[in-house]
Amino acid sequence: MARSSVSLRFLVATAILALVPLVGGWWAWEGQGPLQQPATVLVLKGMSINQLAEQMERQGVIRSAALFELWARARELRLIRGEYTIAPRASLADVAGKLRRGEIHYTSVVVPDGITGWSLERRLQGFMPAGVFWKLWHSPNLARAAGFPDAPDLEGLVAPATYRLNHAMEPEEIMLLLVDAFRREVRPHLDGGVLPPYQTLILASLVEKETHLPDELPRVAGVYLKRLRMGMRLQCDPTSLYARWEAGDLRFTPPTPDDIHRPSPFNTYTMAGLPPTPIAIPSAASIAAAREPQVGKDLYFVATGLGGHVFARTLSQHNRNVEAYRRELAKQRRLLHG
Image 1 (cartoon, rainbow, N blue to C red):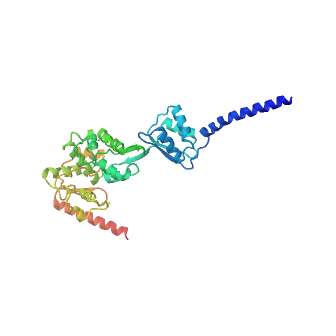
Image 2: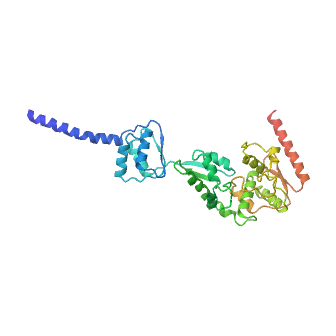
Image 3: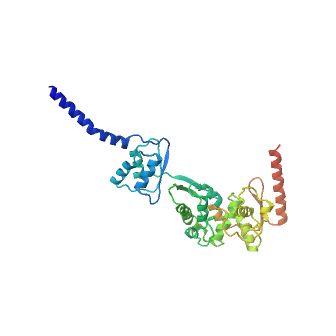
């Protein structure tokens, strides 16, 4: 009886010892991971499983690069380039599953109507250095991809939209995404207007920066088109601001007399005709107005100070409107300051 009891205890002990590696392996795979805070894992272009495993071990996402590599090679894991967010204490099984399923984390970047290259560069700061952005901004290949191979830069050649980006994307890939959207969604609407397509886009950008009121858009476009046909300078205030920014002064304040008199191909106070590029991303409504301007007898317009603009046929009438605008601003300042 005693001998039988000893044999049973030996068998139980042997079974337990045999289970220890299995339990240890299960814990290493399914147990809580070492990560204390949420982390981001980037699977970059050309990265190998070995490089990814070592990176995750250095980040403290996993305990064992060797165990991850063993699993990845056994399952013939195909890395899907992207950005992955890992929760605190995520197990090795959780991390591996997220990578296998390609659960990429995206950031929504809104590119609204009316912004310029400087504003777009700030919105993309987390995805590319400023120097890289401006190099791509002047890329002939990207201008060609947008549909205007002769454009000197990408100003106006980006579609207003919400873009889903991740930090594993290459800068050129991101910029190509933006100009491809322009070529698909915007470029077809520039044909068939009174001006060639690129000039229509430039005119639309001026209209965009002058007013957002739907009923005013074609009237503003009409004033500018009439001036173009007469050889009269456009005298568009937003172009004087764009000339300021081009000169390196990125203050976003109303134009000053220095701005108005600054010699620049963008300043329509000092140069005849349209500027050499758009001065912003125009909306669909501004593009429609530039394609079919409402040309009448008006040659001038000025803000009312109450929202919107008042239009005039003659310079004397326009000057009276300007004085009314100044009186309205003075009135508002008095009310504001008591």
